[in-house]
Length: 216
Image (tube, rainbow, N blue to C red; front, top):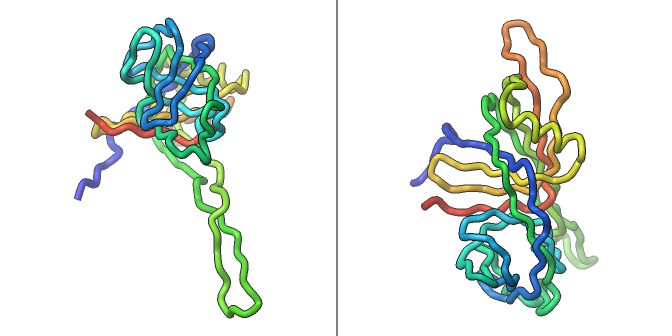
């Protein structure tokens, strides 16, 4: 048994993304190797991918096995060529920078991600059947104590204003990390309930599936 408590988990937001760096090739591999001459990234850098492969597009990944002109996308598997068509995955990456901890979180909830099904039946059968279709979009909500002096407030409010996705990182107590690419919004005024801490609610609407990495 390896159950863990969430106590001590840390949320962070990246204030900015670097200008895009084009890559000229990407392999069908686990992990895929990206060719980007003179890219300047190092192992552990966090990137948002723009790709001709839909399942990779908008995904957050970490750099691994970096050389001067290439690197791999840690934890990604593009070997299934029926999904990742060979030669069509080229695009660009942007590095997430300017991390700030979203501190004083009093509550955290998530919704969505549930599998949906198409239900059908044949005339000769007495029971229906199901086939998996899509999954519901995922939304996270963070309730935070109201304190506009904290470093994360400015990037969160900027994201709310420009409605461009941001990269967020959740570091779990066991060292594992989960990365999200999400549209971020925040309530403009705090709650005012007698004998309760004033709070604001940050909403994260995911633009792609999260990426999870094991701890060291």
